[in-house]
Length: 414
Image (cartoon, rainbow, N blue to C red; front, side, top):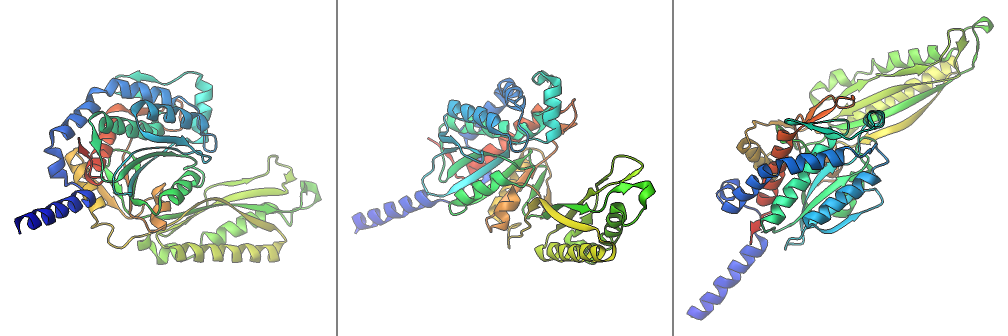
């Protein structure tokens, strides 16, 4: 009987170990190996800052991320991540293998704004370390990628083995349509227990997704010299359309759902004495609810059709960016969100909680997979020649990723 009891007990213990969901933060931070990992992140401050100089100095505008992806892949291999690869997106992906067949996926952005790339070219030199800052264009966004690498190194160097694969991914084209994240989600959606979109140290945590659709609305009309008559005039059509679009009622009716509509850019003509034949204006449509976005866009199309009928000015709508909305029932109360909040508290933050994220996490939330975005100020002057990143924020971001891997990923030192 005792032998049978022992066999059953060993079986139960085996199942418990194999399928343990996660470690509590309280349990994790009491572990000497975890404290050693956090200390390693502090002790490699200069090494990490120099890595940001290297990665951030690589010109990487959206759609041209291959060089930065290759450099990140090289660092992943040096650290000891498994199965490192750069795919066609191009995304760069590496992992720490787990036991469950599931994965916790950390995401950082590889691409920069076009203005950042212009500033990098104009500078002609890499960023520099200046006290607690890394100064130079390209540093602000790359802070998050380097934080992932710092966290991964602390996990590997201290012999952590996770329950679930810990996946570290740098994704392309976040600024221009989330193409890289869409590729990553297609690859991991059936395996992922959650996605963590790393945008900073966690002073803000997003667990829902605000839908954002950007359009470029082109207008076409007859050209001609001022002396040849004024109408129909392309700018008259643009003005009439914009005036009516800004009166669409959904933003007032559904203000509580963060429903918004904006026209920010008007572009047409170049000389005083000539009617342009082509112009365009921007359209920014947002809401937590896809039906409100679709309703506003339907009204916009009706307005454009009406103005075409009235003036003969023709319009075409070009998609610039399509960021999907999404809400997951119970997300705020989930272990992923509440553990992330506890980690932020532990690192000295009182995070603002939001159900209206608008970055890579939108793709996975819209697909129905629990996801969070941890964000904060990373530095300043992004898009300007004097852009800078805060080294201390980079370290706290790495610690947040490290602790999330240890808890949600149930990573234990050997």
